[in-house]
Length: 401
Image (cartoon, rainbow, N blue to C red):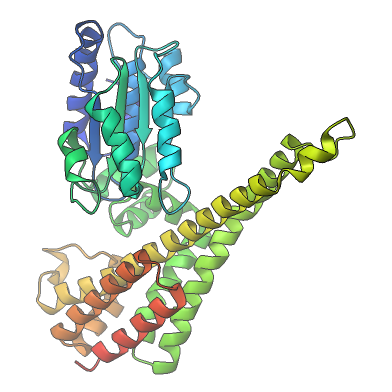
């Protein structure tokens, strides 16, 4: 059945479950038995946020025969982000604050104006601060009759979502899409040739969006190559630190590039709202009172840029860890002759086999541990330059283990 759920890739079981839940929800609007909080989990790229949004569309859908038809006004506006009763919380900074969550909860407590439900989709719910999570928990425990919360997180681990909040939600788990499924999407939706689609799908790590970027964006391919260069540079002391510095610089440049235009627009909009350029009575006083608002905007913009840079570095580190994982699989024969375990980076087969010959299994394991430790350090707000320098040192030491 064509509709909004067609956007999901390799999630047949989830599509069936959500379609059935959407059908049941129509009766439950009257009966009051609807599950008011849902938790969508799955690895990066599995489409947990898309699944939540598709479910929101299906809940609001006005087609009498097929919830989530994708054609009615409710479906199209939900998917476009313009439905009056569907709110998407997409954290732009490092976390979702208590203030933000209180504002969302206040809006969510209202009765729906045009749709069946007031739906709140919270992407990256793992970024909720403890206090913000408590604010959400309170309303989830006593939800308004016509409000549904759809939370998205990587897993049900307490590090990602609190145990208490998890216990109040119906869980929907998404799996990593297969390489053939991703390649099919790239061919059908993006009109890419078979060779490009298969290559991008094979190195995407099961992430549909990343496969699309790698296939269509030259800069995305260049960023991947810079990350993988760190592995080769680990055998050369001077080169290793230079490669680590290059990764940090590239992440900073990406963050600045992505933020620049938006930051300028936000500052101009704020200045206009605060009376900049005005000549009427009170304009000067309004401008003088804008200092605090401007400072708050700058704080949010800085947090957004920091998150963008950290996300860029994290993608690079996942690629680096994948190389060592592949080498370990080759070393133990798990990926021999193209059978068994699939390589994370099949287009680097020669380099991976060379690494497997040069470095002992203990060294490969220590290298993976070093990458994971670097990711954790970044998550704890260690300066990226220091964290990457420590990683370069650890990778070099692992070469001789």
